[in-house]
Length: 151
Picture 1 (cartoon, rainbow, N blue to C red):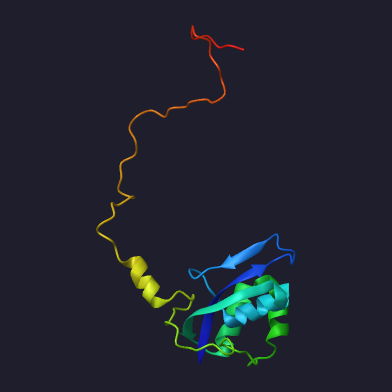
Picture 2: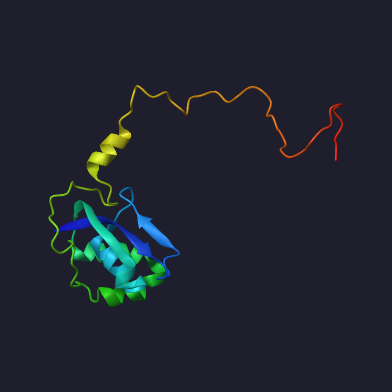
């Protein structure tokens, strides 16, 4: 069965002060977003967009969520009760023609792009460290014209 990995925003306190952005580099599965809706309130999880799909089953996904949210296992069990829970793996109304992903939700084509090396850019890691001494220039100290500290 295919499962959506999605990006979204989560309003933690419900007052707009702490909004977490779940980006495409670390997406959440659709069942994980449903658990976040139960934890933080449905209205506090918004801008949900499917970005990739992964082949899995409901038992494996529940096991993954139980391992990831060890302190919230009771909540995961309430949202998805039983050994073979009734779990929606895809976002309702969204197509499943997104790119395939690995078990962490990263699209496979993004992984290939991240691993490819661009020859036009200089390598940052191979640079030599600066050889000169560090220079400290304090700001806000005034000196008189003869070089002695002034008041």
